[in-house]
Length: 392
Ligand code: GFB
Image (tube, rainbow, N blue to C red):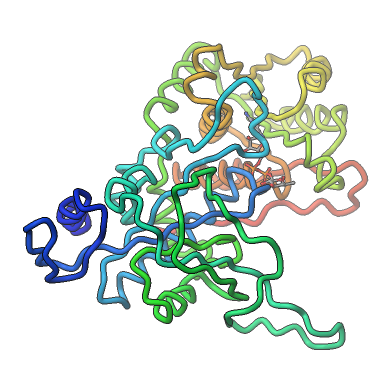
């Protein structure tokens, strides 16, 4: 593949700790081809794992676009997973986790030119990045003004604090730093790159850049490439082989901060159990229940009691699995198991549930077994998730 060849060339400049343009001489070698340029990004700190996966797709489409419109070859640097708010095991060090712990990065590389952060450092050394761009919203000037949804960006005064140290790395520095008010799709970022002409650039708050075409062909091509790592797939498979010998229903029950963030979407434990039992009564062939949840132990036990005499399973990581694959890996194991269930019911508005629905679409499971979510306690009209169908 093209970028592998180009990367190889860039290894010449790794010795030198600097990137160079076409024709420059580095350590006695003449670099004939244009060397790649790199785009790094980060996302608003409190955002969870599964929204971040979505932001990756937007940035991957941006990289595809850059490689169509620019004379240079652009590579996206995968932002390490770092101290996510929902990763609660305080005894584990969950800093700067590479994508390869969770994903099959080779599969992603077949579709998107990406490198892990440590690979970028091998190429770039300690050379400062040419630009740090902090994206921010436009100010709404007055209440009576019609909202303007047109795609636009402009260099502006910084509204909030800008990030000084990405992923706690004090050796990642920048030659210049600016704030840009931004509204639009991710490919609009290309205009910023065009203006600044950097060789290396980092965008912060990349979540502000929207999808070019959510649910389109390119979206699914990138999404499909984000396969989970073989190790995690193996652990899930073993668990299923041992425990889930018959057809099972998976319920994803999002609680904790969702109880405050989306109170009307999360049913009480008792009502959750009622909704699961009601579903099962309509499907005579399913008797087993798998629960994926971030609920506390006490809440899970309460749910389990309400669900008796059904057979109820939940994945509990042993110490070794948790140490090796961290909270993020355990969450993915839950997602893999739910993606293969005979029937899935998730939590409304949870991106954790959305990603399971996508996985099931990729697997080609019947649509009516996938796009289902729990109804909140006092909801008059309980809307079900939009059916985002896989397109090839
Ligand atoms: O993934 P996520 O963005 O989904 O964040 P939402 C939820 C995190 O909680 C997951 C843990 O990444 C896991 O770490 N978690 C949730 C679970 N459900 C499960 C589960 O079934 N099993 C396991 N093992 N872990 C949004 C957040 O969460 O909720 C926003 O992204 C904000 O930052 C909002 O907090 C209220 O879309 O559900």
